[in-house]
View 1 (spheres, rainbow, N blue to C red):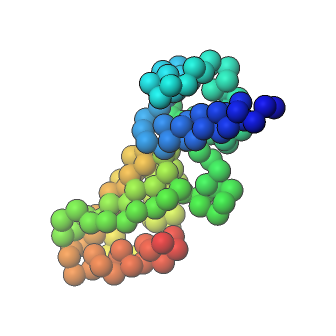
View 2 (view 1 turned 30 degrees about the vertical axis):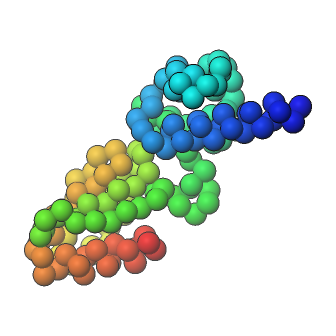
View 3 (view 1 turned 60 degrees about the horizontal axis):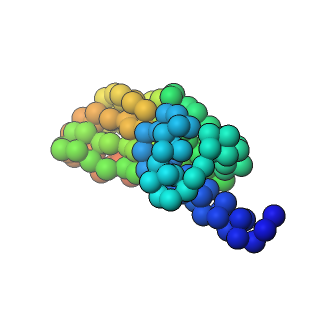
Amino acid sequence: MEEHTRLRKNERQQHVLNIVSAGNVGSQDQIVEMLAKHGFAATQASVSRDLDELEITKVNGRYVRVANAAAGMPYGNIFIGTAGDSLTVVKCGAGLASALAVKIDAANLDGIVGTIAGDDTIFIAVTGKSVQKRVNRGLRELFDV
């Protein structure tokens, strides 16, 4: 493969990674359109090959990179924060919140009343502000973050 062509492919694939990481992309045609906005003339077939090479797959109607699981990050990057005095919010990889919530529920952390999982976000109701920091610390230990 010619050096310029290989560099251009690598640059296009980096844009594909950025597009998938940044949002809710549900079709290869969307990726083709977004690449065109960045100056890449890509076909659906080339995007399909890029997705395979980058280990990106469709989960719950959205494209996500599954390479994180192979790298020891089965739930993607995890962020743990608070929303008020009795609500903890956990962000994770796209399509992985339900699996993460099951693990949280199974851990039986004292102070958790319940969990609600969306696609990449989990709301965790805690008994109050006095236990919220302890719960968050327990979650960080559980997921090594």
